Amino acid sequence: MGVNQRELRLEAEELFSAYAHCLDDDRVEEWPDFFTDTGSYKIIGRDNVELKLPIATMLCTSKAMMTDRVVAIRNASVYSQRYLRHLVSGVRVVSDDADGCNVTATFVVFQTLQDEPTKVFMAGKYTGTMVYVDGKAKFQELTAIYDSVQIPGLLVIPL
Image (cartoon, rainbow, N blue to C red):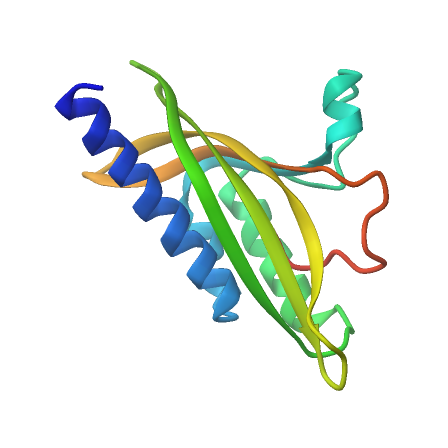
């Protein structure tokens, strides 16, 4: 792996780490800032990916849609207080070209509800494209592919 590839992987690791901490710290208002203005975010089941079915559990096709999602989370959604903890590992830069760096990582999200033990909420992998905007790494696209056929009863907050 060349120096440039190491630097790109470190940038990707920093981006994923900051992304996870933002969600874990309940700073969801900052979540859209991890994306370009035309960026997209998707949560989709592994089974749909393998069958090449485009149906996503959550889909935002622009930063503006992500901002709307944040407004809905804060003002319209009613759900029990919860604490999330993301573990992100295995960050890789799969390719690098003029359109950006294709990146992947594995994730596990733990959830703690009041008066309940911590449980695994979701596990899977991220795939995406990392680009630079004004010298700062951002996602042009990020897809969270969850492994389970069943999703938790309430998937409100991005993974």
